[in-house]
Length: 148
Image 1 (tube, one colour):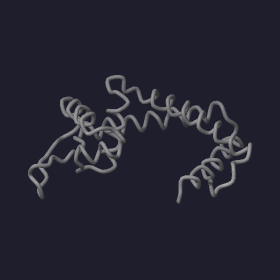
Image 2: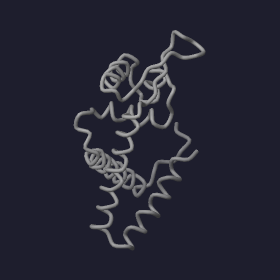
Image 3: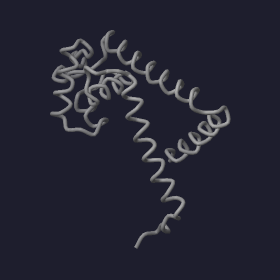
């Protein structure tokens, strides 16, 4: 038997509403970055590498929650486009470390800028100042949910 009491109806409804809104918002934000020549998986791998270069394909696969073989195919495609470089690990020459190239960094930065501009524009056009302040307050609550 569960130690936790059943969630209240409002908690269940809030859960549904937050998940649905985040899902829609995520799709719209990703579409705003106009990376038509990249798959979602490729764009996600690039973004993850921008935060921590010098990782192996296995580590990147684990971070992304995909199989090593899938990530290897993703990385091969990104390397062929000149967005990712593979260099031997100085501590273990059998391993290859992945880093973004200058072009990879540029693409990530452009995508982030486009997504920020899209969302800020929507908030400016469609929300009042009070509604934007409510969004900021709601984000603080959602952020608190993600902390242990």
